[in-house]
Length: 102
Image (cartoon, rainbow, N blue to C red; front, top):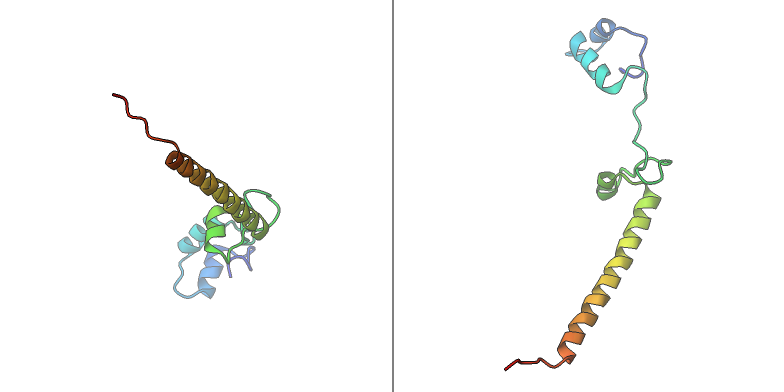
């Protein structure tokens, strides 16, 4: 209602909206803006598409669907490389004889 009628004053809107004072309407307009439309923020990586709000994790990261999927694939590859390195180090430790200094 507030965004649909930016030309109306807070007092006029207060008469149309029950249980809302003119001060409450002014406060809401100061947060949202009088003339702006409410939209999803843009992706923090590509800055072109809106944030994927259906996915809580993507919304928290501030990424669109494409950037979020790319990021998850990248993290999966990095995790696989890190696991392979950790396993090779573990096997190397098992193979090498333990030296005891007298």
